[in-house]
Image (cartoon, rainbow, N blue to C red):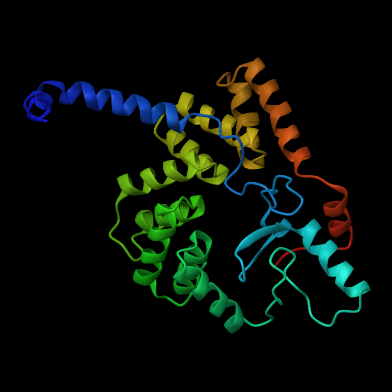
Length: 262
C-alpha cells in the first residue's frame, strides 16, 4: 500500500488517460437492448413509444399494451368485476391516492422504479429538492431515466445548482444504460460543439435500438458525407429489426382496439 501511495504521483497522468479510454469504450458500446428491456409476461422487447406500455404501481413492473389488453379481455370474458394486475394479480387501483400508497411501499422497499415514480410525484408537486433525492437514489440503482431527469435538473438548475458537467455525466450514464433519448441528446450536444464523428456514433447506436429521431438525424447527415454508405445501410436494417422485434399479434390487437396506455 505504501509503495502504491508513493508511486501514485508518477502514474497519475497515465491513470487518468486510461480511465478516459475505458469510459470512452463504455460510452460507445452498443447496448443489447434499450433501458426498457423486455415485457415480463410475453418476454418481447418493449417498444420505445410510452403509449405502448404501462407501469403498474402495485409491483412496478412495466408491461406492454398487448399483455395488458389480453388480461383485461380475459377478465371481462370471465365476468370479473375488478381488474387484476397481469403480473402480480393484485387488484388495480383506480385512484391517484391508491397508486401513491403502492409506490410509497415500493420505495420503502428500495425498489428502483418505485423510487423514480415517487421522485416524479414530488416533482409534479413542486417539491424539487425531495424529488432530487428520490431520483438520485433511483439513478444509483441503475434507472436510466432517472439519470435523464437529473441531467435536465442540472442543466436547468431545478432543485440543484446548474452544473453542465454533471448534466453531461448523467446523460452519459443514461446512454450507457440503454436510453436512446439520452444518447440522442449527447449527439445534439456533440454536433453543437463540432464533434460530428462522436455525434454520428451516438445516433447510430440509438437508431440501432429503434429510435426514430436518431435515424432522422442520420438521414440529414448522410448527404453531407458525415455517414458512410455502409454505416447508413446497416443502421437502416438494424433500426427496422429493432422495431419489428417489438411487434406481436397481441400488441397489434391492442392497437387496433385503440387500447393505449395513458
